[in-house]
Amino acid sequence: MADKGRIIAITGKGGTGKTVVSTLFVRFLSEQDVPLAIDADPASSLPAALGIEVNRTIGDLREEIAQPSAIPFDQSMPTDMMLERKIGELLVNTPDFSILTMGRSEGPGCYCLINDILRHAIDRFSKRFATVVIDCEAGLEHLSRRTMRDVDTLIVVSDPTMRGIKTAGVIREISDKLEISFGKIYLILNKADDEERAFFEDKIKEVGVELIGVVPQDANVKAFDKIGKPLIDLPDDSPAVVAVRDIVERLGLMRE
Ligand SMILES: Nc1ncnc2c1ncn2[C@@H]1O[C@H](COP(=O)(O)OP(=O)(O)OP(=O)(O)O)[C@@H](O)[C@H]1O
Ligand SMILES: [Mg+2]
Image (cartoon, rainbow, N blue to C red; front, top):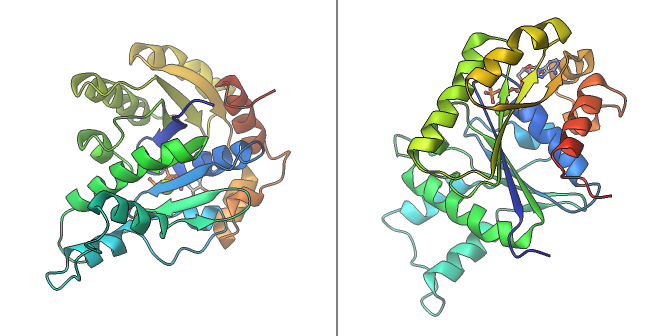
């Protein structure tokens, strides 16, 4: 096995379906390995979508480290190792997948330290897990901070709106400018029907990203979210589940 896992980051404009797509990626990847899911959104909705309760986040660890009165790390251990152990303690492990949650910064503090810890975690854990799926915060924050600099596959999720598609174009431009070398950048058109696919196909090409698949409106997704039922438990034949399985296969992420 390669020493580095495959890192897949799911990004895009707010509310386009990043968390739904991330959840289903984790579900399919866990059929063959134990992937690591990373919730990189301070608003944190991936754990609930995966049916997991998380008690401690990178935000909490940041508070601990940034306290003026913080007890210094164990002096007998190198800081790097200590930090890795501390991040390791934040993981919630299930037989199917593990999850790490970024969480929030309390008070007005900036996100520099949280992002540094997150980058460090992605770097370290990508060697330990076969695959890492990162549910990003909406917008360009993680790109401009280069938190995602080592991503193999960047997925932009868009709804069938020009704003969503343009965001994908901006993400591609920024990654070119910042010289973030993604292995590949793809677009998933979510909540769209055939007519919308036909309408947006050329526009997606124009912004320079490859359309990897279309996910239809799925009444089950809406119904599950309405009552807060974990999306990972969506039925196998639910339209969004079928469509995302197809995408994961097309990306070559399923063995066989
Ligand atoms: N294929 C779909 N069919 C029906 N509803 C969907 C579908 N995909 C997403 N939704 C709905 O759209 C809303 C946004 O989805 P989701 O939370 O996954 O988006 P997001 O991009 O993660 O949002 P945020 O930017 O707030 O993190 C939710 O209410 C979800 O139920
Ligand atoms: Mg989300």
